[in-house]
Image 1 (cartoon, rainbow, N blue to C red):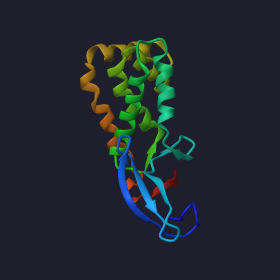
Image 2 (spheres, rainbow, N blue to C red):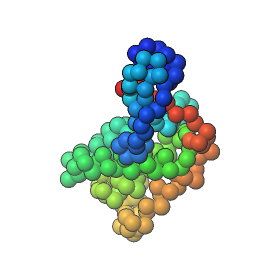
Image 3 (tube, rainbow, N blue to C red):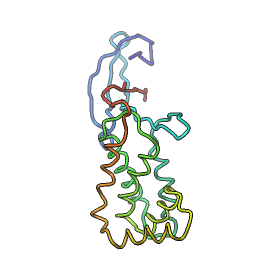
Length: 178
């Protein structure tokens, strides 16, 4: 890593620690030339393949925006939404894939959202699954009544089986200066 102070092309790692929920590593580095210390954060890349074929980095904030809309007016706190978004990201990262279809992100949201609030789940599912008629809503409501929330948590595991995207193990990590 290039030193941000003197531009020397090498540095030594002095300390490494996990950050946040374990998806990042904070490294304290020292430049052997000027002796200055600086911090970097390293994170494994997780890219989302959009319907258009374009890829973009996974953004937990986008998950939050979607579930906030579904939960609008519902008795769901911001902390619950943040935990849901974290859970979705963890589910996606556990697949071991570096690239995930956008549709799989939606699938990963459904099970934890249903556990959080069934009305919000129905709102989200109606957009995600393109409900076109009352029958679509009635069918989903019938499923909600017939299948307990705990029984649908398997749908989050479907994400693990659906994509042939490259593995995170094949992916490079990025490091940004702090």
